[in-house]
Structures are given as structure tokens and as C-alpha cells.
Length: 66
Image (tube, one colour):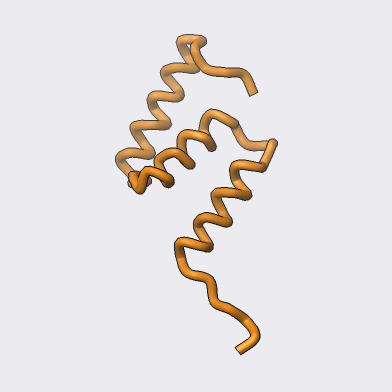
């Protein structure tokens, strides 16, 4: 068979690598999502909490600019 089928992990790894390189996306947001993925902690609850923390940080002026 000429075509190799990628595993789910390989597909996700490729996806997050592309997301990280996309300059149009918010750097802080993508970095936090990738961190959760790499820690095997990417869940609905953890993602919601992380995004809320980022919002609060940016509202206080602590976040980095794009």
C-alpha cells in the first residue's frame, strides 16, 4: 500500500504545528492551547479556564501585544 494512514496523534501534532506557525492567530491564545495539548490536558473545562485567564490578563493589561 503506497499511502500511509496517519494516526490521530500524528494528525493532531501536524494541526497544532500549523496553528503555531499561523501569524494571523493570537500568539498567547495559540500558545496556551498548544501547552494544554502537550500536557495531555486539552479538555473543554481546561480550555475554558485557560481562555478566561487570558481574557482577564489582557483586560488588566498584563497580556502581550500581538
